[in-house]
Figure 1 (cartoon, helix red, strand yellow):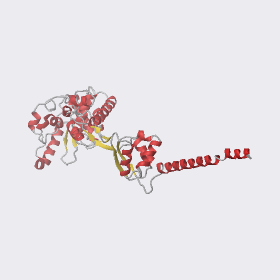
Figure 2 (tube, one colour):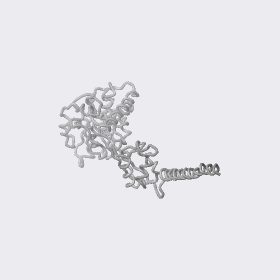
Figure 3 (cartoon, rainbow, N blue to C red):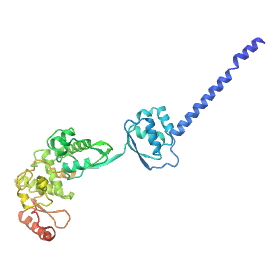
Figure 4 (cartoon, helix red, strand yellow):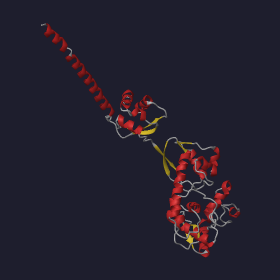
Length: 360
């Protein structure tokens, strides 16, 4: 009896340990089920409507969870914080401005922040803008961070040095396009993107240029493209405008392009180009000086860049605006034809616009 009693005493604790183990398994299973149910489940009634959530730099998991809960993107700060720590995502959440849909699970919300899918803002540089107009626009963009030193705001070498692209000429060297950038992007970074894009395209178009052009370099092609950009907004006219300028350069004629004269006048330009302005000699007065202006006068777009190195086949040497409000031009091969076109222009506009500028 003594031995039997002893055996009974040795085996009796086993069921209690088993029960404790089973209870622990149930607790763990419950926690795991709760984790899965919260972390991977899309909220009921959620839709694709996006809410902007701005996560500041240096925000920790609790602060991020609080912002997400207040914006309605998650239901529980504590569960979000626990789950991100359990699967290691908490250390990888990134600051930024996010547009988060309402039909994402908490895990999917975390993935948006981990992958840095920040909200992008469109910033547009317009064809035909000068550097001064470009800088005014960029520094006025609410989504951008103005970081250029005062000396750079005048353009030129100081501006290029500020964006890490040393050189002497900044005018015309930024590609006009729409750039998608995150909030807080520095103005200098946008300019650097536009500068690199312009030089890439200018180099590509120059390498594919038509033969025997009277242009010595891609920089001269860029100058010509800026003149074309300012002379017409009609895309199909750009190769014809280019042909006139190329024909004049080949013939040793002055380009006589008003936009270049206006650029050279700077602050003296009052909105109208007068006869006296055409006689005022500046480096950009193509009525008083031969050849191309010394620098571009504006930002040329892709079509103008292409036209500069692929002019139309034409014997035209002159063009003048049509007096029909279309913004288009009449092209002429001889001075007699051109004078006739100018006279017709003057007759139609004399009463409402005053004397014509004389064409090219």
